[in-house]
Image (tube, rainbow, N blue to C red):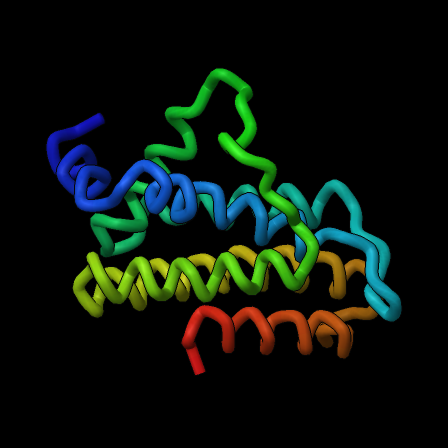
Length: 156
């Protein structure tokens, strides 16, 4: 890990860092889960989410790049240290917790970049799944999901 990434990561407790680094994966799972009215998800939707996570390497945010580096540094196949539910209510609660952590430790630009990046990860999953099923339009259930996620991430 580079010195800048190490410095970024040490600004957070281990619990806070886990929250920041595991949230993108939890969002992918929540966006890919079956729901009434949601188009059938394919492997392509999950891969689109992973691609969106990787795109964070090019973000103009030290925090986002550090989180992506930490995600890719986890090569041992471990899961989060505690059970990380992926149902929507729990994921939205985790998003609100992340906002509180970011408010305490992060400058506004990095906070906004991280929150927008997480939203973009979910949007890629939803767009890929919807476009495969119904063309260019987002399914209403996906639109509601992204709206709720944006609210929880304080993007609205």
